[in-house]
Length: 404
Image 1 (cartoon, rainbow, N blue to C red):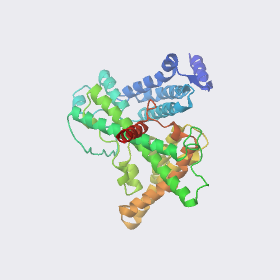
Image 2: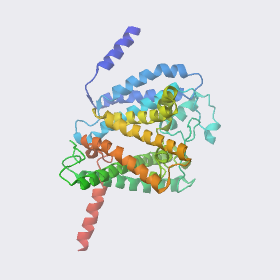
Image 3: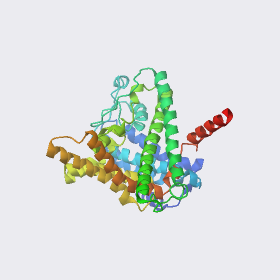
Image 4: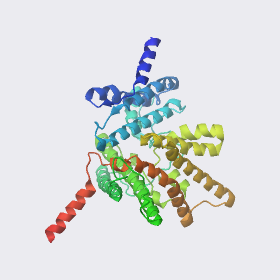
């Protein structure tokens, strides 16, 4: 039995070629890690299952890695983003499942409805797992640590009113995301605006204009990431509220106006999305703090975040730049702690905002240059290849032509 299991593992690890996506390969390669994560989510809610979770975790890792061999693009370079999304999803599965495997905390929902259910029931755990899978911040659960949930600008108990509000926000963020992406492509259609990619810097421009363009591209890339996460989150919220009758309170805002941050601490600790918070605390802060002290724990969280984003990038050779951006943000937060300890004042105000933006530009431009070189801006798109900003521009032009 053991030798047979060993041969299976060796066969899986020996595979390196990509596999075309078909119905058969979907169920053979992509579906298994989802089933494994679901089972892990059930186990983490049941008493005395930690040994089983630790034993099951390597199986999940193996299936998650195996799923990344599937070519979701069908060989079409314009659809390469689908492969990136698959790798990101598998990486997210692996990291969240690692947290569930090692935790000593028994997960429980805190909502009034679930509080009346039997927490020891396997049925309750199976039902709650659906929420756990799409709830990385742990809204309504007992396991988040230090999570600050943004207050919604529009509070309502009406599902209809909430969905209408989400729909308007979804449409705006889809349009804004596409506008940012199209602008990035127009700025340099033959280099970083193409699928082949190209360097961010163009020495044909005067130095001042070259730097100004680099800052503009960095701003547009950050804005595209923000709008992309926003419209994805709102779409998922609409589906869950309509299909599973979830309450609006289960879907608080994902961001808390990050442009209003006046320090790196405020940006990364509260105003940027906190979907990776628990994972970074478990896999980054705790082990690095144990080995290197409090400052080590801080840098460990940013290091793990950098590794996650480097895997998501999907292209080798740029690990130092990508991970370095996140580690240097950890260094910036550490410097803010030194400032507070030395002066007794927190970094903030106009000078704090200036410091934060300057630090992000200095360390962010090299990472944006990496995304430019691998052609990421050309592969970013709304699902289905829809280009709403271009459609809107075309519609406005037709209206203007008709009026003339």
